[in-house]
Image (cartoon, rainbow, N blue to C red; front, side):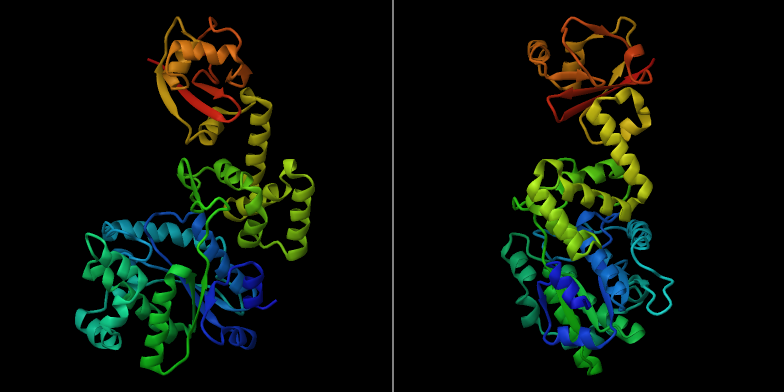
Length: 422
């Protein structure tokens, strides 16, 4: 497949400029995607454009990852209902550094024929004077067209409106496209469907200033089968940085994908081909309880982001948790696995505690009577062992490595108690 057919088969073509399919089939292109440095890490929602750049390179084209060190100082109003809080230069620079490292896991910067490029628009935007911006960029755009943008109209209808700062964002992004066109011969920009207006602005600027033809392709904005925003969990965003989302949590995010989403996600977020994905879809249909597609999805994406070792560790931890064999796991691993579950600190006590005391302290139960009821109902386990006696006392010596209790209520709800020694 060429790039267009590859993206279309995977369900990633929402809209394109006219004639792009023929251009992709005929020419070797240089194309870019921009990444907004609002955090020091990308999240799983960013994987869609990251994978698009990787697919682009595998199809023989040259990818450019643009990190918005300059535009990040402004903030893109697209999809936002309120003005962003402006970040400091130091914050943006730190975030740019984190994103650079993560992009390097997917793109080949040493390829002989089409090495990937990584650029920061701060290199030119922070050197652009106001007069240059107004004369060389602003003169090519009408306020009428800018006001017609959906993101601008929504903000103007709101109570606080939109600042001139964010109103100018699309012009800065258009200038990025022009700079990349001049420096690297870039003639194509990709992004989410909410970026269509910004991409078209860049295409228009290149046509007006250079008399050249440029193209755009936008991908759909992702939601889950239930209609929820993709990439959000009860614990918040799922990050690519292992210190923000542990590899175990990352693996579990994909493994727990809805059956209705599993095949779709395999197309979006892996390099598996059509026969392999079709086989996994068929296996899921015949044995849904075994979650064949989700397991392979979790393996593939975790391997891409964190490496093969992280896959082995995540699956080993999951197996031990399933067996309730918590004593075989180092506390450091448990703290990583349960990093986002409800937790509390408990001062060490020579006399120890009753199980109901632990349950109320950890917030598992709101009262002693509720705790007793949960225990009698067989719904509580401590460090992987079912609790049957509400009068049982435990001490810090029974904590894992003398420092941690893991309480499970029912099949899924986990709570962590850290024993603090005086």
